[in-house]
Length: 203
Image (cartoon, rainbow, N blue to C red; front, side, top):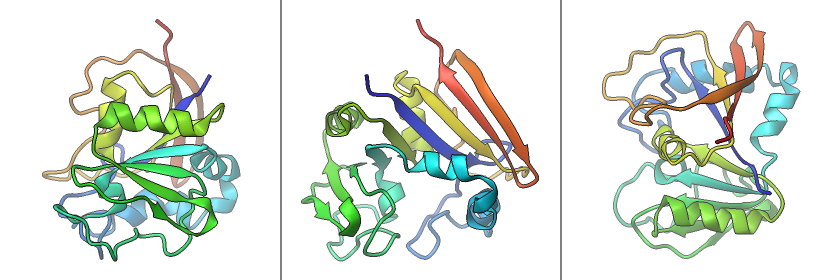
């Protein structure tokens, strides 16, 4: 049976990015937000091989539009994401959006599919694409909250940076999600991050 996972780097107070995202500032207008939350990944990846591998081990991915592009409204056909010609996913990626766009085939096996029929349908399509493999909810925070509220995430892996951001206007992990009963699976600490793994408690 397909497992739905989610990896997310967050601050101690639950922020993963700031508001006013642009193409030049994918993490919004809070200077240093992206760097401080991803120091463990960008500067110390060799110390976290299992966690790094886990982020991209899924056979299909779902992401919100803001994870792919900061621009609202109709698509700019020249925009193909922040990752260059060969994104790191190497699998189908289903992007939630209100604006139709033809699938975007990239080098290395990544194809972005743009889903206008809602989060439930995007997850259904990702599960079909993954076969017996895992599906990862890739972000951002609003998308993760949507799937948490729906009880759709089986394993939540948080990579918590030792910083409080207190971002006015930011979206916080677990905002509006309601009660969640989770089982703590593991915790591992390094100077720049604490890795926490939780699983959805069986009904």
